[in-house]
Amino acid sequence: MSIRRLLHGSSLRSPSNPSAASIASQFLATHASLPPHQGTRFLDPNSLQRFSAALSRSELALPEPPPQWTPLPPCYHLAYFLPAQVEEELGADGTDTMFNPPTPYTRRMWAGGELEWIHTGLKDIGDWRKRGLRVGTLVNEMTKLVSAEGKETKSGEEMVVVGVRKEYESQDDGLMLVDKRNWLFRPEITQPQNPVPKPTVVPFPDGKHVRDFLQTPVSLFRFSAVTFNAHKIHYNREWCREVEGHRDLVVHGPLNLVNMVNFWRDIHPKKELAIPRRVKYRATGPLYANEPYRLILDEEVDMVTKARFVDSYGSVAMVGQIEA
Image 1 (cartoon, rainbow, N blue to C red):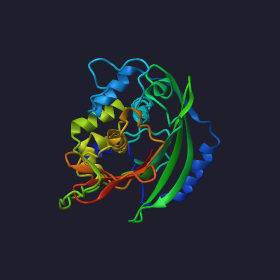
Image 2 (cartoon, rainbow, N blue to C red):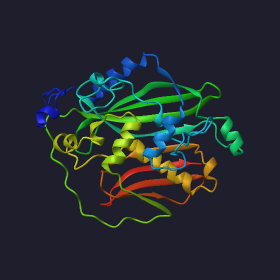
Image 3 (cartoon, rainbow, N blue to C red):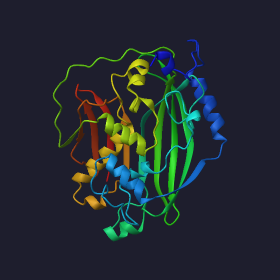
Image 4 (cartoon, one colour):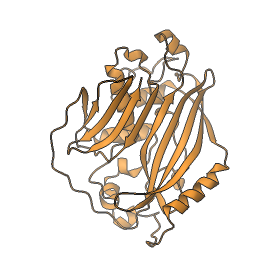
């Protein structure tokens, strides 16, 4: 496929673009007067089963779907509240455009965020099953744009950082989860980028708890499928290498978020009750398919566990902390 065909849908603009700060200010002012976007989802068992299978988590990826009232593990709400745009409404890179700033700042990356579970400190498994996000319940989602700011990368490229706040309210139990997300938007592609070379491989650092990962094109495709994520950097190698300058498919930020929390649950002394109070995370660099990387969890201090993902070349790709 030619570069021109890969770029079809991207307008080629001159280097003289409006500043990121002015775009962000206008964008925030426009959205401040708009009502929150609202929707309702039924937490069906099949979606939870497929999501667990995509994560290679056998406890819920069973031959039969999880039974009624099965609690959703932390972060598994990502299986349900999915973008609903038709293909013609997506960006040139395949991303959902509901909260995109105006052109030219349309090339989206998931930068990080914070999640807070409202009902924590449950006494026993029976109490947990009676409250929270559970299979067979209806949950309302309310999404509001809360921030937009112009910034510069270290190389001097302008970008717009957008923050949204999502609230998930069970129709039975009230507010269950607040999910704050930050996306950064770089200028759209006007000229193909050269793929970045592979650095020199170095030994992984050690830590209190470590888990190694190697995502394949299949695992990334399956996660894209169960989250209805059409972002081309996760499944289209031609787009990655010939347009955006990545050396291979890019691992999803939310996939690493879920794996981070799942690892924390696995080392928790009461795994079935391991519901964090709060999780903060920030992406600092890309991770790629077919390249090993490591998740390191430090010793818990004052109910807080720090985490970091490190690639095969010694770079930290994501940092986070989990509050028990």
